[in-house]
Amino acid sequence: MSWTITPAHIDGLARGAAVLGTGGGGDPYIGALLARQALASGDVTVVGVDEVPADALVLFVAMMGAPTVMVEKLPSLDEVVEPVRALGIHLGRPVTHIACAEVGGVNSTIPIAAAAALGLPLVDADGMGRAFPELQMVLPTLSGVTASPLAFSDEKGNTGVLQTADNSWTERIARVACVEMGCSVMIAGFSMSGEAARESLVTGSLSRCIAIGERIAQAREEKTDAVAAVVDLLGGRELFDGKVVDVQRATTTGFARGRARIDAEGGVSLTLQFQNEHLVAERDGEVLATTPDLIMVLDAESGEPITTEGLRYGQRVRVIAAPADERWHSAAALAMVGPGYFGYDMPAHRFDGTVSTGAAVDGGRSESR
Image 1 (cartoon, rainbow, N blue to C red):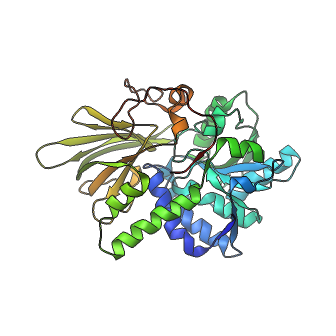
Image 2: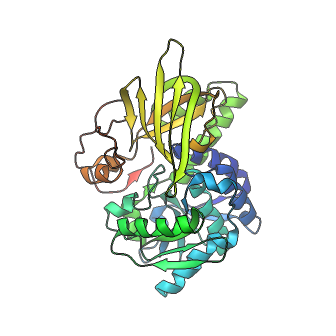
């Protein structure tokens, strides 16, 4: 069933996206500003994947790069829509639908801006059910959808279209261009039919973001535990409660990489490792959860999500974990987004601490939980 995104939805959607962004995806406030600006000219129609025609042309629209640079390098609406226009010309057919590559941070609101500015419907789905740092790390890759041709643009007016051998090469080449263009660019790619979208996307993602954001706001208004409300909504668990005592962070090769240490009473410590998104959570050397499941940091009292670039010494935080879409636990998916891919010598640990076996899972689409 279709519905309409209005400016009234943006705060809740941006807040929920920052939760599902697992620390990455950029400052949701910036994406919310862009979405509101675009929505000033009209609301956006949101459709479920079942409503997308089989012969549709669906594109991901996203920001690629280090979230840390977006604070000073604000994108414009022209920069957001230019890759879509360029790719439509390259493909020789009109784009019919916009979708989110990831349901995290700015990449849940930038597609709203693109859809509003172009007058196109937005699909209530995304390619991950969370956020990941590299371009090829989407479920459509596992379904054989190619990232290229991929269009990209920057604030200086530079625009390009890449045609690559596979999705990993798209990431490698586009990342070099991204670094040269100031460590953040707008992209459009992963052109797919309605049939491919139904097969490969995580459905109901935008609705889920709004539900999470509104649940946090409701808990604060009712003076109840906002963090517990999020844990309940996501079907996850709370990993740790403490104070941020150390953050090491650097922007390198187009990513925000680093680690954070959180201390609790009694001398217990939790260490978070991140590359844009949180990848590993360890308590005094014991692995509690890893990618691909979701690791999120929330303000201990308000429940507001805290991004990796927003982590600061002295913050009182609570760290929670939640299950990813089950398709991320297939052997092929773990090879692409598991801890081993990022250089950590450990098996993937699910949100509940159990080890992921990499067993084959149903390749069909999955509903957001």
